Length: 385
Image 1 (tube, rainbow, N blue to C red):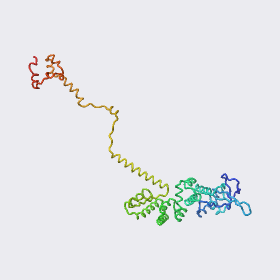
Image 2 (tube, rainbow, N blue to C red; image 1 turned 180 degrees about the vertical axis):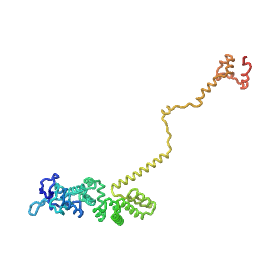
Image 3 (cartoon, helix red, strand yellow; image 1 turned 90 degrees about the vertical axis):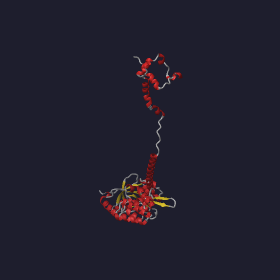
């Protein structure tokens, strides 16, 4: 049996559960806070053909409200929270009822908008421009910060801020993004040229006609920004530095020269961009500082290594050459030659026991010359036959 032919009471008394009820299409009203504003007619027709054949496979989400009629009675109406495309396609298909999940009607307008956004985001049912309008409405009408919006939809603060920035683009670019003619990534190079409307339109036409990739569009955007800046840079060295910084940092850089000093302007588009630039600059500074420190350390004179006293005491000291040879020489001197042995044998006992040379009195010192001593030594009287 086709689901649309089932006759189920559309007005239950309790709505706490996720029970599905069938509701008359004519009793449903669109949500005034519906974030989706654009509905493609061709896609609606395709969806209506599918509903006509298979029915509504996914229930819509509504809240129930009661309005007083002219005769004093009450009339139940249902306000959409999520599923407006399915409701519109069902009306086109001519089906009388659609399945729906009824939420409690005690929600405030802000809660209804939050529910509508979250329902659509969870289904990835919003295009970038619809998301931007919904985030902006939460921010302006309900005074929610970008960080609070991000927490509610499970996105970062930077994501919310960058999405809202899409509303700054011209209407034709917003329309192209809504229709899927350009990707969301193409909006970044276009937003870089917000202060250059002519160049921005030129780049937009190039993206549309040549089906450029996001990387190609970003490259052209940086080139346009650099060419525009170059007209105001008189110093070729500063011009070259601008180009290098733009390429290195991945964003537009302008050097403003003055009589003394100057300024360096670096464009950024989100807090995430600032953090990325900070990381790049910090990494470059740390690398340069480390290299400079290593060079200075290598060029500095190396201090002498001073050993601890305990280590010095344990190191053995090699004997000097004189000390090694001294005992040998002393031994040779004390060893008497054969001639001296004969002389000692011939000397009387008193002479052999004479005191050491250092202890002899001055009168006992033999002051004869060496030749006289030699003659006396080899005298015939000293030999025995």
